[in-house]
Image (cartoon, rainbow, N blue to C red; front, side, top):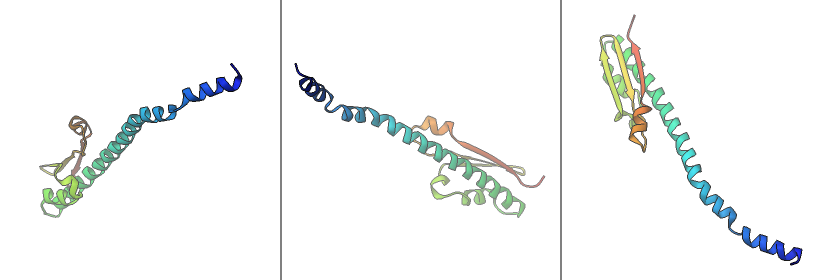
Length: 118
């Protein structure tokens, strides 16, 4: 068999290889994108929890409704996932980030606390 004949056999055996590799890589790529997006949403939930707790404490200092102020301090999507607890001069807030996996959302729930006064 000549050299050109062997190269032709090798080229035929390699056909479609990149397509197979791409199809095999797509689930990994989607998992990485989903994980990064989930971490970004969890980080946002942490920021929102801190803002809500501080807003509730400030409202408490001014004689207002701490729960309403904390609820108003977060964007619409997180209001339904918000838990606010007022105990004396302390405001505790928990924000559960949205997730496809509920157990993961529970694990990534952000908590924050702020005190009104000393």
